[in-house]
Image (cartoon, rainbow, N blue to C red):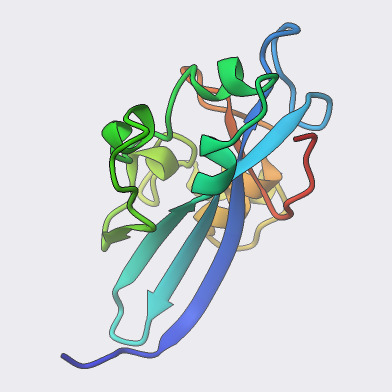
Length: 155
């Protein structure tokens, strides 16, 4: 099988925000990095999203963070990996040529009528889902995950 060259790539870090002291706000709430997220475009025109959970941190997380992390899991990834401590953990989850649920919930579709207006509103000149997630202060309504471009946190 031919290995295609990567022509563009981006990285972000999925963090969970501490919701226990009221509604979390990006930049003002304690957070804990739990996963690395990669986006790659290949020279054949295909693309992929790759999630690499930080299992050591998730399994050995301090008692102070357990209620936060156990409140939910990253949409689209296998919840059984997270819920069953004895299960062999997948090191990576790859979504080829499709937007995974986690990304889909946090970014406007390319074909949305006002998509470029949304990109411009955060300083982007072209569609860039990863950078959009990093630059927006939003979380999805049903979870407490955000994406940032660094691994600094309050763990």
